[in-house]
Image 1 (tube, rainbow, N blue to C red):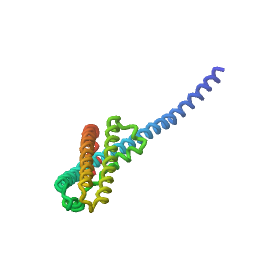
Image 2 (image 1 turned 180 degrees about the horizontal axis):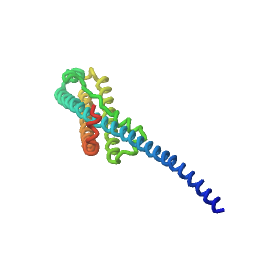
Image 3 (image 1 turned 180 degrees about the vertical axis):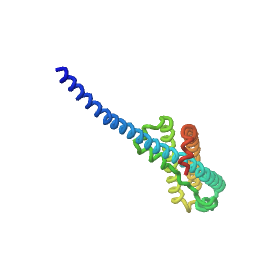
Image 4 (image 1 turned 30 degrees about the horizontal axis):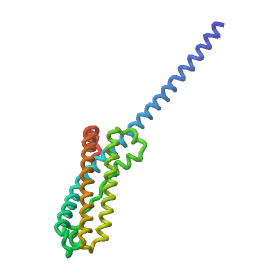
Amino acid sequence: MKEKNKTKRLHWFNILIDFIPEFLGVLIALLLAGWFQDSSDNEFINKSISSIHYDCETNMKNLKVQDQNMKNQIDTFNHYLYDNKVRVIEIISKNGGIQMQNMLNSGWKILERSSLVSKMDYKMLTMLSEMDSYLSHMDFCIKTLTNLVYTTLNSSSTNDKKALIVLFRDGLNISYHMKNSMQRIDSLILKDYGRTLRKYKK
């Protein structure tokens, strides 16, 4: 009887010994899979952040050009505001046309559509959403402005000139808020992701 119990215990012990390596193998595989997934997620987030940083830097430069053109247009429109002999097209041409710049936002759009957006810091997400809103407002302002310019090209009306001045000022106001928003985003990126930016620098 004792011999039988001993044999049974030995049998279960052998099964346990055989099971441990398999269990450890599965556990290690799961841990490695999780580690590789986290590593891949971090890589994606870091690349997106780097792209956002690049977008902000490029947009700041583009806004500088666009703002100067808008200021020049406002000054010139004010100069010819009550001159009914000078048409809108002539005023616009004096400043090299309307120099609207393309605004980049691909880094945020890619991250926003990803499930990994939930891993982002809340403060950063709030800032990025705010910037996206300003970009949408700027896009709407530019479309409205260009449409009005197109429909009033041959007009010399004071009212049409005033309407265009208002839209140029709206553009400058939106640009001011956009630049502040992008500066805050860039400062946070440099603070939290400064080391990774060098790795993904374009």
